[in-house]
Amino acid sequence: MKVTDKLTITNEDCFDMLRRTESNSIDLVLTDPPYGMDYQSNNRKDKHKKIEGDSSLEWLPDWINEIKRVSKDDSHLYIWCSWHKVDIFKQEIEKHFKIKNLMVWAKKGGGMGDLKGGYGGCHELCFFINNGKNLNGRRDTDVIDKAYRTGNLYHPTQKPVNLMAYLIEKSSVEGDIVMDCFSGSGSTALACHETNRYFIGSELDKEFYDISVRRIKNDINQQRLF
Amino acid sequence: MKVTDKLTITNEDCFDMLRRTESNSIDLVLTDPPYGMDYQSNNRKDKHKKIEGDSSLEWLPDWINEIKRVSKDDSHLYIWCSWHKVDIFKQEIEKHFKIKNLMVWAKKGGGMGDLKGGYGGCHELCFFINNGKNLNGRRDTDVIDKAYRTGNLYHPTQKPVNLMAYLIEKSSVEGDIVMDCFSGSGSTALACHETNRYFIGSELDKEFYDISVRRIKNDINQQRLF
DNA sequence: ACTACGGTTGAATCCTGAA
DNA sequence: GTTCAGGATTCAACCGTAG
Image (cartoon, rainbow over all chains, first blue to last red; front, side, top):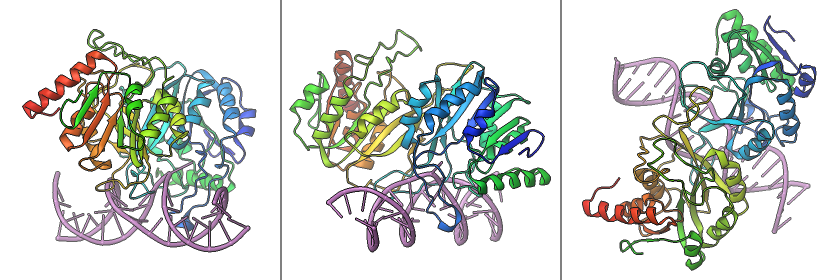
């Protein structure tokens, strides 16, 4: 569905979207896939359901393969990941790409989990692949510790729009085409609207898909960006 | 060699040291092994030589196996690592241990490497394994971004003494036995002196071994800890 | 501008009971 | 025994408001 002139989100499996996508056509891949940890937020239980398709990483090899095909020769890619499965992601990605950085997002707020025998988990990882373009702006570090809020209002694992917008501006210019295969509640799409990029995305879960469409329309009407 | 009453460092391969070490005898393993990336700082090439035995990780499986044997049933382990080989380290460690956290040390100061096409590398990773004791003190996060300075005075990948001391105090009590198989310029040993723990370590490279012994003696005499 | 305080939250882990 | 799924729990950091 064309949500706006430049933003297209479809309610389908990402492989269906990828199949229709031309080879060598995407400027920037920015995506937050299921981490493969069978995640269910048990925090205030009624709020969020379990993540669909998060119980294995079987999709990963074919997915990387397709991503390789559709991304331009000088594209940039950002693939989010948690440390629990970082080895699998790294090895699959390296079959097709040369990883440039493993970035760390040092999140604000305490983490949950073991309160006595472990440290509170406060970071997420992101693979950065550079197929041949410079980064925009000043030289930043691979640790992102700016004041980005989590704010999981719509999706249990939602990323902040301004975090996504930051990466988009580092790695693309206005009018570029950005792809997110796991669009979720639409944070990447919103960041593209904010930064004037084209967006192509898919989200399998009907509920999140609907939320993302509504969220974008609302935010655009109200000129309010989360 | 017994450098002090409580600090022992030997100039040998760590497997020789491990062979002499009793099973189930070490309270805390805290070590910064060769990262397996053939490290040579491009910054002032003459300053640091290549790290011996750093070109492959062949030693890793046997080493983990020995570490498993010598560490106590309720021990803690910290194993430093860079993201370049994080997949290999993780998979080898997980053959014998359950990893509790992947910690991130967000270093201060700019990183080196590609100035245009990549982010500056400003972090190092550290696997934390908890075999069954609580951590001391308040609940901290898995991102360490306190003002620990690198200051590679003696060794190209030297860790700050106060960073090591922090981890030692989180995971042991006075009189505990701490092991570092890759003692380098002796930062872990110094941190043990500072926190009144026993230390057993080995360093293969004669030059670094000598430096570490001199450094410890100096620092103890001058009551000055780096 | 700065501090004080209370409310809210987190890609979690542990524990319990059932299969 | 062992695995598995669901519910309870927890604290430090962050946000917003008030002083």
